[in-house]
Amino acid sequence: MVLKNLNSAVLVELTIQQKMGYLADTGALVIRTGKFTGRSPKDRYIVKDQITKDKVDWGNFNIAFDSQKFDILFHDILAYKEKLTNVYETEVYACAHHTYKKSVRFYTEFPWQSLFIKNMFINPNEQELNAFSAAWVVYCFPNFEANPMKHGTRQENFAIINIEKKTIIIGGTAYTGEMKKGVFSTLNFLLPTEKNVLPMHCSANVGHDGDTALFFGLSGTGKTTLSTSPDRFLIGDDEHGWSEDAIFNFEGGCYAKIFNLAQDKEPDIFNAIKFGSLVENINFLDHTRTINYNDKSITENSRVSYPINYIEKIQKGSTGSIPKNIFFLSCDAFGVLPPIAQLSHEQIAYQFISGYTAKLAGTEQGVVEPVVTFSPCFGAPFMLLSPLKYAQLLQDKIKSAPHPIHVWLINTGWSGGPFGVGRRIQLSYTRAMIEFAMEGKFDHITFEKFGHFNLMIPQSCEQVPSAILNPKNTWANTDDYDKASQKLADLFEDNYKKFK
Image (cartoon, rainbow, N blue to C red; front, side, top):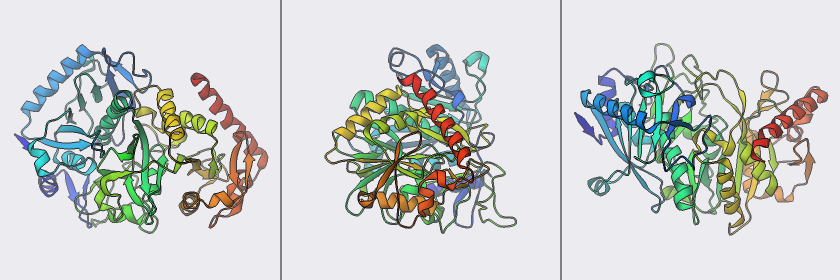
């Protein structure tokens, strides 16, 4: 039986009835996604055909999949669907901008998957549902496992995008992020090639004066945390487009990491964990239904999805004006980068294409401690085109903006030494520096050129100790800092060679 467009309350009720989840004392639904608690990049494929063969940037992230093998696997997926007692059909939109809105129909195996979709995408009103026609269809059946010999996959789990057939199929994994990132990857192919829109792995918010800020970064670098501010209005926390006239959210919800979540540090996210929210892969405190946010026994990638209107201050329509400030977030495991630096035009392209960060534990399968990584455009696993295409689009957007755009590099990682020696930069300091930048106060501060990267760093910032602004000052041994800095600079250069 196909259960179509059920409301959130019914989906929560069905999940509990089927013993797939529990209610926390806040009313949030708590579930586990099983074996996979993060994405599996090596098992995500793009069908190689006449549309994609000369456009997709094939490689480690965009793995080619044979179209005939796809047809065989898709046939078996549909046969599996017909045998299920219940299938949950959910119809939603991606892209808040009316010009670029995409209609997507999901078929899922579990009721809580449907809840995730309703939380994360834009829900049609009754009139839109009556006239709904899906441009794209996604099938996600966690209990369907591929046969690698028959289907051409690496192992039993898979996520495959077929641009020509406007179809995404996912199996063998219940991790909800695969559905969300499948749609995001598709938009990253379609919008630049068809609409000259820059798709971005970033969060975005708007100030009281209408000024928009963007926060680029991989999962765990602080996109959700730093864009959710009590003094600004949230456009979205993860995926956006930059058109000729606007910044617009791809989604209708937020998907936030909650390990070590604290109400005093991130009150908006904490308070959004209520009825209708879906919490993944975390335990309760003993003998209670109170979520133990310090628990990482399942994963450090425990997450919550919730509708964007669960945040008190949101931007109406999930759109904003052309940005005035852009922040590149990097979680530096070496403890080398400064907590804030202003980038020149040349440095913008260099840092954007480099996309340096430390991949944090739990975000992907097999990552158990921070790993140095270069992820072009701060989102290489989701970008189907060449990074140079997105970088050129970003430069074009900045050049054609109706006002100057300030671009900043923010280190949300370590200071005083590398991971295991130094300490992570305090969130309150990072917030203060970002607020200082958005208010234009750095215009009155002296900057100095610093380090192997020739970054311009400020000499002072309100509410931030001046000593930490220059990372070399925070190390016990400055010679050790110089060695670590040179090592990181060499890694940057080695990585950048392939783009020259």
